[in-house]
Image (cartoon, rainbow, N blue to C red; front, side):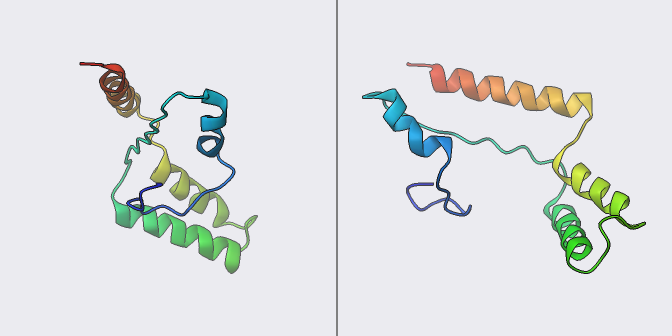
Length: 101
C-alpha cells in the first residue's frame, strides 16, 4: 500500500498504521492474501445488484434475500474443499514468510 503499487483505496485508522508504534524497533512487513471465489464479472454483478437494492429497491422486499445471497456467495464459498485450499495457501505463505534462509 505504502509504495503506491496497491489498487485499493488509501486507508487510515487501521491496525497496520499503529503496529510500528507497538513493535518498537522491529521491522514490520505486512501481507494481504486475497482468495477469489468467483470470476470478477460475477462479483461486480452482485455488487451492482446490492447497490440497486439499497438505492432503488426495498431492502425488506421480495428481491432482498436473493440479492443478499448473491453478494454472500460472491465473497464467501462455504465449500469445505475451497476452505481447505485457502488454509493450505495461508500455511504455505506463512511458512515462507517465517523462513530465514
